[in-house]
Length: 353
Ligand code: A3P
Image (tube, rainbow, N blue to C red; front, side, top):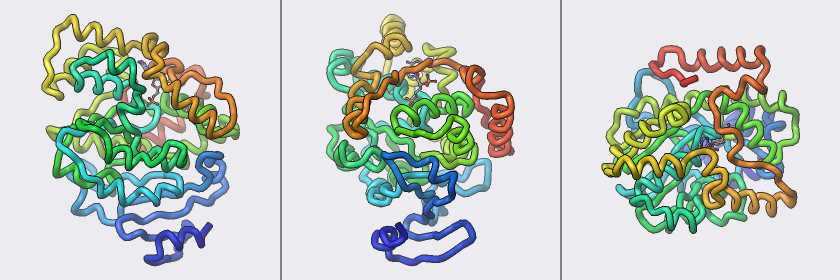
């Protein structure tokens, strides 16, 4: 494992208390080889790293209200093949970037912004799978080569390109902050994310540990794309920029019309109330659950092939606020809340309930 890593990044190797640390010029990363970290790997991604931008001093747009380093990220080892290409990607002004921590309403946001940006073209939206219309840039690093080269797919997308990512701000293209395309971030309460991610990780990624093991891994930020709170805070810090829209899942549940109006205004698009009502209906949980073009039917089929198994899982699972109460114990809920509160200390941001 170490030899493979040194072959890819022969820059320098240092030892430190937390394990072996490597530097890849732009990025510093360490292999995550504790027992708990290894438990969070699956057949799809069997080695994890924690990766940081080496020098964020000049490349992060706003330091924000907290003087802290930008969020690191847990990713598959394979991400190192794509890290530089993503960070150095050519960005266009008419790009649309949907960025979220997993299970925070990514799919919902993708469908909403694609339609708003494409003059409510339901016909194309119904014919072309959402994952083709909005390419998941780092997917190749997680699912492997079955999806082809998803960074290349983004490079070759017809403009305006719609791109999805779960990467934290520091790993995204540096040009986002000079070219200033539209970036739509969607946050979700970590307690509901925990439950949603637990089911997703088991059914889609093939996690076969216990629910408790997964939740402990999440609490210790050992799961893919963790940590969640710094991920959100990095985007909360840039929410005032003209090219950034910061939404929340709970806001979409409670006031979809308000979110649609805010998002249309961000896109400088003007639709009638009647058109917005129709859009809200199209985006409702029941409609999206039944919509094969937006409910990840194709992705599930791909994962069935990749993992050589049958997946009995609906991506549109419950679509509610507060469903953690049915599945998390009061003790775990309290520990998770304390973990979140510690990381939010000093910030004006609060997750919605
Ligand atoms: P649950 O697992 O809690 O049901 P992502 O797209 O980021 O992976 O997020 C998936 C979550 O968003 C799932 O949450 C899913 O049900 C929910 N979701 C997707 N589309 C939705 C919609 N139209 N309305 C409400 N929730 C939706």
